[in-house]
Length: 178
Image (cartoon, rainbow, N blue to C red; front, side):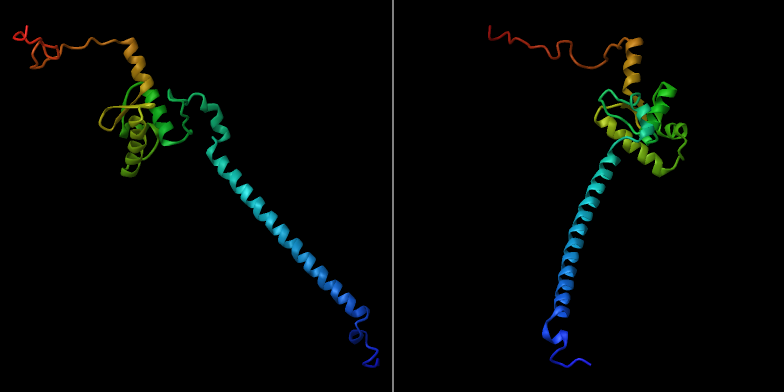
């Protein structure tokens, strides 16, 4: 049995030196772990940003339809959306359709939620004067169809019937001042 005076632990000899080295190595590895965790957080943030950008781009299957779905305003519609389905239904009918008929043609159920959603989506385009028209309440057409119809079938305007005097809007010269 070693005496208390000659014990390597008490004298601070090689056993004490190896303990310090081990503690230093532990600290060094902990710092490496913190740096790697920081890199992982940055990499996860980068991946999330890429995923967000990918969600904004059209899906690969939509690339073929993208050229046919470009509106006069230059906006694209995602295939399978209510708006794209409505456009396809109206194009197929070649005339303005009621919301119920648009839902039938697009294979969607005729319920309050779908009618409201379809009407709201199409109304937003009508307000911006893009892609769709609203010739009657809850009836939607396409700008491209209405312009082609007007060009091929010019309709003479009926004479305006009103109770306005014939000289309405003309500047009258006051005869008393001359």
